[in-house]
Length: 196
Image (cartoon, rainbow, N blue to C red; front, top):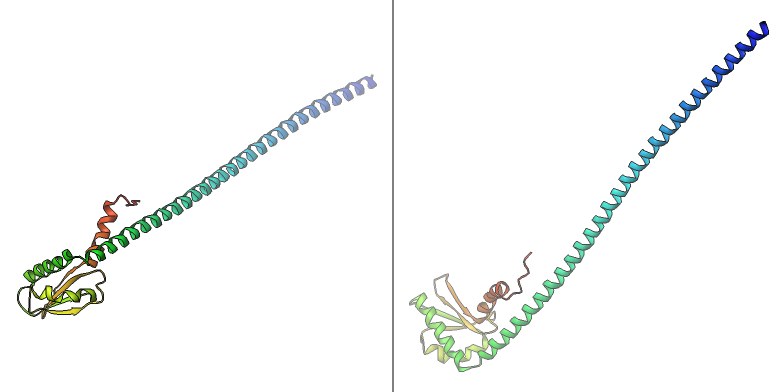
């Protein structure tokens, strides 16, 4: 009988050990599955952040590349606009030089002098001309015999500048300054304005 009790006792211990082993295996498997799931979630989250960072970097690269291309294209447009303006104003200067060789130009000089004298009034008047226009001295003196004529090398195209002695006022009726004044108007009204 004692053997029977020992056998039942051993069987009970074996059953309990088997149940304990089964519980440990289940808990271990559950722990391993939880750890795998947690690791998978961490890896997925890290992968997601890495992918998002890479996408941001690529978008930034594309943006920088696009901005660089736009800037280069804008520079080319500015160069083209400046070249067109230079060509237009070079041609205008040539035409004004050709105009300066006509009889109408002499009348223009006389009218410019008359208008300037009307503004400045009486007194000692100096009229500044380019070297080529000094040849029109007689025509200018026919408007105002007492004027003094002087060379002004800064006048390249033609026209005149008039100053009254003792006055700081200078009336600039040169074709050079008039052409220069047209640049801003031309840039705004020619359709070549490259607004931002």
